[in-house]
Amino acid sequence: MENFDFYSPTHFVFGQDREDECGELAKKYGATKVLVHYGSGSAVRSGLIDRVTRSLDNAGIAHTELGGVKPNPRDTLVYEGIDICKKESVDLIIAVGGGSVIDSSKAIAAGVCYEGDFWDFYSGKAVIKKALPVASILTIAAAGSEGSPSSVITKEEGMVKRGTGSDLIRPVFSILDPKLTCTLPAYQTACGATDIMAHVFERYFTNTPEVEITDRLCEAVLLTMIKEVPRVIAQPDNYQARANIMWAGTVAHNDIVGVGRSQDWNSHGIEHELSGLYDCAHGAGLAVVMPAWMEFVYKHNVMRFAQMATRVFGCSMDFEDPQRTAVEGIKAFRRFLHSIGMPINFKELGAKPEDIPTLADNMKINGVRKGFVDLSRDDVCSILTIAANAEL
Ligand code: NZQ
Ligand code: ZN
Image (tube, helix red, strand yellow):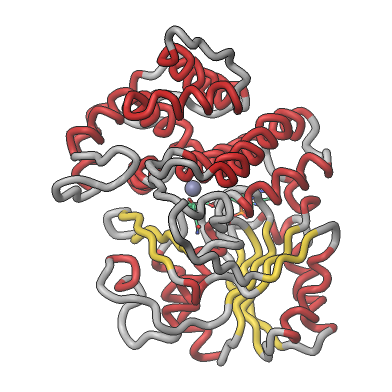
């Protein structure tokens, strides 16, 4: 195991109707004026925004609202949010929604405290040194942004999707009410589930040996997802299954299942180009990319893939031919994704094989991209070609 720091200071408030406590929590964290930031309508339609503003009113906290965050959140709305926060002296942003709303809130929070263009944090020109506090009320189990230090924003001009990270933008508190996720359509539920599993796999495939605790935590999250996702797709109102998935989504990405070893974020890097170019759901893009990445890299450590196959997907170990077990595990993963309604190839995703060179160029790989297996631009093209043509 490698040395590590683990710092995850978010106060998680979990359970049914806990969003009604947001006013008191905002007060506890010193807020006097809140920006309530939300998406394209689901939180208004469900009455959640009314409940949040009522709770703030009851706590005597002033507030202003900004809706309209799109999935793959855009820079244009971030600029609007920065202006509002400056004009109205906002001192806490509450994101009500999923990863897109939380990431947009994080970008606004950092942008308000910066003299230059907030995009500098995403283009790598500047590092976040100060940010307004952000809180979240989560409505979809997926990105893990409610506990992560990351934010991913898409620049409208050219549809370039880029991420940044800082502990300064980790939410100070995140309210997780599984009941709020019961209104999710099956497709969004499955996209979120795929993202959660991908966050674990990016940490599972490591070159650091003997981090048994982290392996076992990863496997626990994956097994939970395999059990609970089909249950919520069949019964969208199943509170207990929604609760397990919601907490799985948070622990999958606050790094508790990743510490002590090297990680690999290349599937995410490749996927961000797909959702940048096609504006598809991040989880759907991962469903196409991640099994293809696995097929491309598994020979680097056949036994690790065989371990995944046996412990996570229940495949039997072929001691004569572990490679066969490894391949069976990858196939089982793709079958699982298909069974929950995810696309498995370019056609099903709505992507075009002729765009593969552009997608690889957009990653701007200079030499190699580090990971479990370092990838060159040609390797990315090979992975995307596997993804384009994948079948069950
Ligand atoms: O906008 P509304 O109307 O709310 O609809 C949303 C949206 O269309 C809908 N939705 C959310 N909660 C709902 C609901 N519909 C009905 N009932 C509910 N309770 O779901 C759709 C997707 O929402 P979005 O926020 O985009 O989903 P997700 O949480 O998957 O976030 C995706 C974004 O997060 C980024 C992704 O790249 C993508 O841009 N990521 C952020 C990460 C981070 N900050 O740590 C890590 C991830 O790897 C990821 O890259
Ligand atoms: Zn993700």
